[in-house]
Length: 160
Image 1 (tube, rainbow, N blue to C red):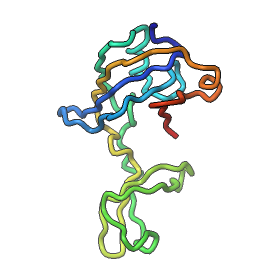
Image 2: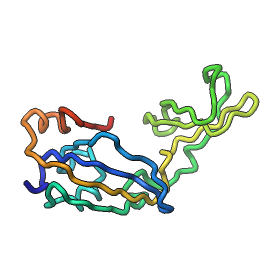
Image 3: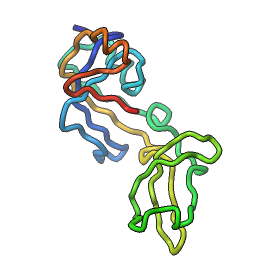
Image 4: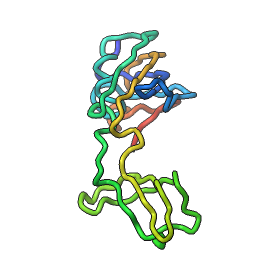
């Protein structure tokens, strides 16, 4: 079966940066509903369209295709009192942007005295990424999956 709109695609993937360092790798296959349901990067969906199980592809994702450009305005300092006592660099938490009002994940980049520096950019923002994957299976989506807009069952994976 070929990958087309409303098929469920299972794949293994590896995400690496421009230097070839692996950033993310899946131990278990992931499944997504193909056809613009935002379960997969659009550029990857375009490359997979029409392929079948066994296909191996590598897609170069520019920041615009992946996690966006790095936005300096998403960095800020907060009073330490706003954080739990065990606050440390690398911790991540959800916060709401003061201007945008949208929730995003912030990463703590520094803890100095009574100030905590946070960065609301995705860790891979501004990076060109290499998405390599092997298609394991392709099947027609169930009616329920189409209603919900994402794959169900083993390996069913959706981003909130």
